[in-house]
Image (tube, rainbow, N blue to C red):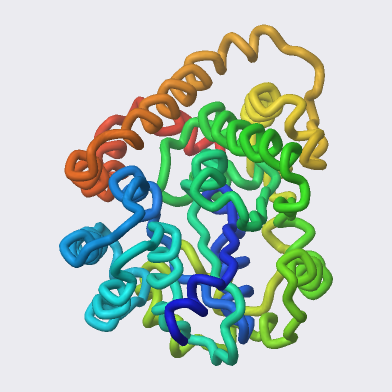
Length: 356
């Protein structure tokens, strides 16, 4: 595919919190013969501030862009041949945009699924869920799929892995923040946003993938529902440990057995906390709260975690505008954070034992 054709390819984004079904949806759509959607690594946010103002690119700038990509943490995770990528980036010399180089990068993704003519590129990263406004400024003409999962099931799923702190109120706040940010943007640009609930996706995958294809302007392909038949190739994308720990659902047909588990696995107190913090946003997203009455004691109890969540969000906004070399070093520290959290028992959910 020549570069001018790549530049014309539309790109869409999957927005959703960790453990909300975003990897499942990415895999489903990557199994479509006309879509390429690499695995996640949020280099866009890291590199855009550095390169956004370049309108006319010379060779040294393009080589630097390639070097920044090559040394970016987890860039190999994208399954992109960096040596093949370099000449294509260099071919973009002259008048060009950072957005077009993103398309070049994604078009070089090697999918495990059979491809025909590529008419659409995609991207998914949980980080986008709380920064849809930043992403929209970079790609104002793109389409966005916002995926939500019942916040109580989401909390249980997060607590089983080591991505984030395991405080119920803090996780509920992050869920609320993602919903609030995406709802604000989707109200302004309704034709570019599609809201999908994880529960609806797993209960009727064919119907909902058809809806997504209509939204994206694609013809539905039944091949997407056979995504799990590539078990032998899946190991090229994820380690066996990652599959067992995070992505076991990718090895089998879609089931809805992970919905509604909060009713038996969360304590009464945890449900009250989650319902209190999420508040009206549960109703907006179609999730029924068990405790909808105002509980001032619970509001006071959860306030420190809500405050911490808000301040963490503000700190991350500051990190976004830092110079690239500084950001790169900060990002490299990310993999050790779960290990540090385990050293501080106070930062974990006091009752891991509260989850039955």
